[in-house]
Image (cartoon, rainbow, N blue to C red; front, side, top):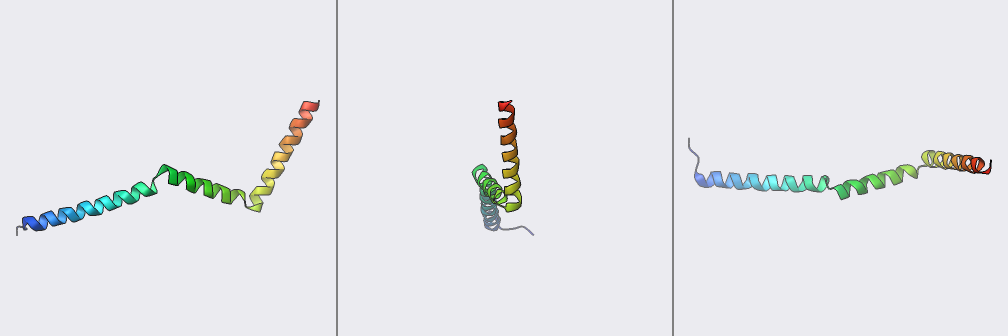
Length: 73
């Protein structure tokens, strides 16, 4: 059973449109700027949590005290 050439052309055009749409979506999802923005937002949210924020402040203060102590010796 042979298919009509017009039907084949329409099927090919539909497949091209679907592929173009998929490639556009992948391009948007894999955009380096978008990935960097997502990582930055995620990191900022994580660092603003009290269980992460306060220990980091403590470690920073400890390092600061140790550096000042070493410089004064």
